[in-house]
Amino acid sequence: MKATGIVRRIDDLGRVVIPKEIRRTMRIREGDPLEIYTNIGGEVIFKKYSPIGEMSTFATQYADSLSAATDLAVFICDRDHCIAAAGISKKEAIERRITPALEEIMESRKTVTNENGDGDFALEGVHRNIFVASPIISAGDVSGAVILASNDNGGRLKESDIKLASVAANFLGKQMEQ
Image (cartoon, rainbow, N blue to C red; front, side, top):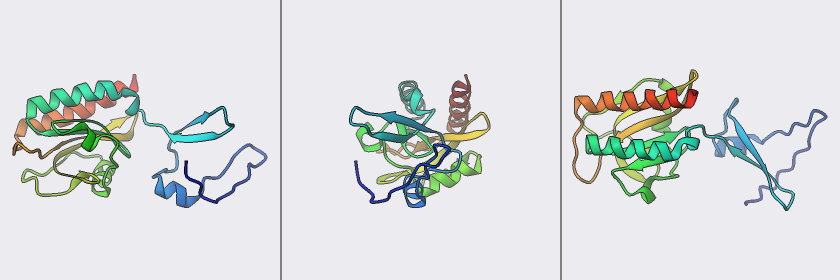
């Protein structure tokens, strides 16, 4: 755990303010859910809650199936990190932060395509161009995205791949609502 040197007091309602610098660094937005943990040493730990993260095993299986069907790299991300990957080394992608470009795509709430595959990257440090990015929307909120990206096999985007990414995002969003 990294010390920040910032001290905050708890107010009379039991609230504590998380400093703006930490919220910005950790990409914590107003309304984001946080999990609260305690340990034996008396520490209180706040962790961003990811509803998609709860489905990581299921998301991994879906990513594997999608990659096999499209012959492309597949990433399933929450609003901050990649939680499932296929068609690429999982070590290369899992837990990588999403790029600002992918964050903008999610905020647009629309499926974005780039048939040439010469556009933006989805994950920081992973040089795989986005072919298709489809936001996962659950209960009216953007929870993440399904991304089809370039791979080492030189796979190309097909019209059906766009629909598959959109269906995957819709399906994952519905699963989170249940």
